[in-house]
Length: 167
Image (cartoon, rainbow, N blue to C red; front, side):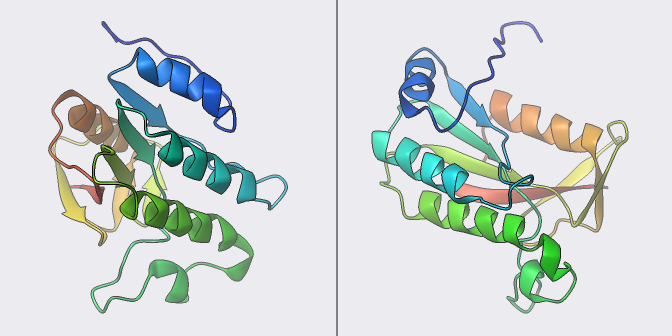
């Protein structure tokens, strides 16, 4: 993509992330971490450290669907739709989201979460967005990527989590 510099960093290296933030308009954080070990603590602490360091660039976090709210307010991870053996990762995303929500008002952040089902595929002709609740049942990776790029290029959300689904 023209005008974009891609760099991969260790999110737990706050100094390196802050150095990159100092020269960037947007930091895109796409890391689940802990899948292999079951220990999501380092990633949660890394987000907390980044928030405390207060970068001036925008933070775009790729989130997960498990922390989305059902129409009755119940989180997907508490609705019995996610097997318990996979629930630690969604719980870590909820914890990370809560860290950002409690951050100082000056921190510019946004989190994009997929629909409950995300699958490989190209971009749909159109997509729908929602805040905190599933925008629909399914989204392709192509549509998710398009929604992410649209938000990065033309910010429409600030200090919130939003979701995307294929229309």
